[in-house]
Image (tube, rainbow, N blue to C red):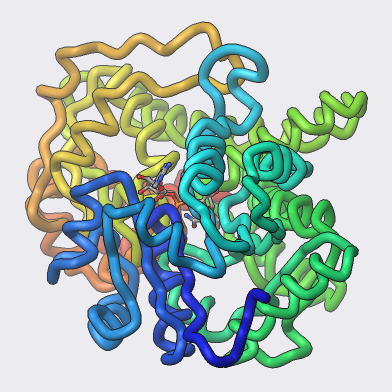
Length: 478
Ligand code: NAD
């Protein structure tokens, strides 16, 4: 059976990334009697997980890892050994958007996923519960079942869907006290037994009523649906911000008034330069593709618009900067404060900062970038890579190779701002709220502009100092 009480349950997680690392560290912490191995094909990632410099920055993560590592939490590149030994195998590999071939620009690329499944089939010698942790298209469990059962050598595999809802920047808190844990499985007795085995793992710290059990397709689709709803909320408020700027309404006041409606609720209603991160766009595109494949073009278009509004918000922001600065930023220094896609992470995947910086470089600006958690290498890499254009998957936006020379990465906000014509806040890091803006103002040519893409500064105070301030969705300076 799967959970014979005599022997220690062994868990293996394939993929030691932003999801695999933190989720498994928390399982190890909360379940001292379970042995957890997190494996990855990336040697550098595993080396970092075993060092003092973890590969990802996440508040609270260091403590959790340090208290379990070497006891019941192990990071290894010996993928096959740990998969062979495990009772429960989580698959938490990356599932990016396909960049070529059928479904390019929308469909999920399941290459990594399939190779993990085939490897499980190759090395397994005992029954396994295989858990989808990655976000995958609905019906992926059927595909993995086919791969496993056609190669099964008499081994019984049960597939579960257990999508992860953590948010980067608050991953450890989210994992300690999740709103819900979702487990989908087959309705057969074996399927239900597998659900129970996984439920028993979470029951070590998650209250029973927060563990939701569903069929496989509901679990797979719920993850895509949750991300689509969250992104839609941001695009809704950002769409309103454009109308606020045009009419003199204040988006913060509108959000407050709207959020007071208990059916709507106050969270996740902040206007900004746009959403980023590796998931929202990818998962909505995935949803769009699934709708199209199922003959539902109107539903597909509905969700597509969420991304279009997000793209519009970013280009609107760039246009506002350029038009405010007398219609050109050519040769002007612009300080970029924040590059990560949100605060408390060093993750830059799909960060709006990439689009904003490229837009400004397109107008020949010189950028002085500062982010407390993103390395210079990462910033230079992000800005020199061709960005994949989901809307026109065959055309890649050309990049100007000389523009990298127009980018410097600075050690702090003051160094970035010195001599800059404008200050552009792209991540809501707490430290940007309490900078000495008077000192910054004095180090800048006049008029000195602030473009607050996250509405974190106190615009009135900055105006008093002398800045010209643009906040998203607020009445404009005269
Ligand atoms: P990631 O890129 O940080 O990590 C994936 C890891 O899998 C990489 O280290 C890669 O080397 C490894 N890998 C790929 N193929 C492998 C193989 N065959 N064998 C072993 N290792 C392999 O990605 P992530 O951000 O952790 O996301 C993983 C999944 O979780 C994605 O499907 C994502 O959509 C989903 N998800 C992400 C978040 C988030 O906030 N990042 C939240 C919820 C869900």
